[in-house]
Length: 481
Image (cartoon, helix red, strand yellow):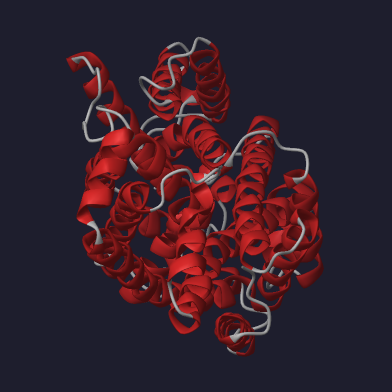
């Protein structure tokens, strides 16, 4: 059954209107001409940092991929957010405050600007362009996965064709992203995070209530899913278990260090102390929504077995079983979850392309990333989504992992002020991304995520290059201060 101009549709469009207002509010409160306006004046408090970063980190994967993994694979996939949590705890204990402090010292808006701080020459320029090119490529892929998630959502809910759903969903986000810029993105993300909290509570409560109505049928459907459905590690050896947990923990660290749509939130904090104070807001929001949506998928298997595409399970359940008012809130929730990440990704792509590829150092004198730049790059990612193979989970995870493999190690080197040179960073980046692809080609990614391999290889290569070059060619911690 489709929802056209019904109560559910009206609520959905009201939420969409509120998102546009939040973006417009950000634009009206911008400070044209300010060197730091691309980071909202570096004045974000812990709530804006934590909620906007958490909403950005959630992505369409949470309301599509996580539901699908829980529905298809069972309890085992609850270990994914738990493994991620281990990495996040290490990450927040060590890095966000350092990222903020270093970005302030370097006056850096993008990762390329941070990595090439106090480096000069052709190799440093090459490092800047290479990092930006990798980020634009993989972030565009990641954004395309969000468009696919949105297409699945809208085509099922409003009975639209796949192409119509894709264009409507993606263009609304492209337009409000271009309107709001970075500040509007933060405000919109924060609003969408609050919608996500409400939607999560409603979704888990509703599907659990349905499961309790007929426990016999629920138990039979779960049993029919197979004996491995309720196993934390079906047929897993100790090595494979440790590899799964360790791989995704490293992926979480790589995600925090290498994803510019996340890192720029930490750059924009009002102080290192305020940035670090956002850790419990970010972690609590991310973990509670991720675990809840995976659990939703697990319970849904017992309530509605036989769904052809489990990644559409959230919207299908509410369409078929719940009244229009609550269904409208869930529609708004799904849109907000996917839009918050897509919006932040578009801003990050535009910043990297404009500041590090198109204009280089001269772009640092510009006040903000332009409306046209964000819009044109957004349209390009829509086109990319039409040709990418795979589902939301595989595309998103692949892009995130490759960025972590290429960039996380060099970022770590920079903020910890380990010895490095432009040459050593160039080699580290190249080795990290190369190792990730080799690891994936060998078929080991499911055992240990390639982000961890790339991070380790990049750190090793930087050390070896520095150790084998003349001392004056490698910068020390004292030289970078």
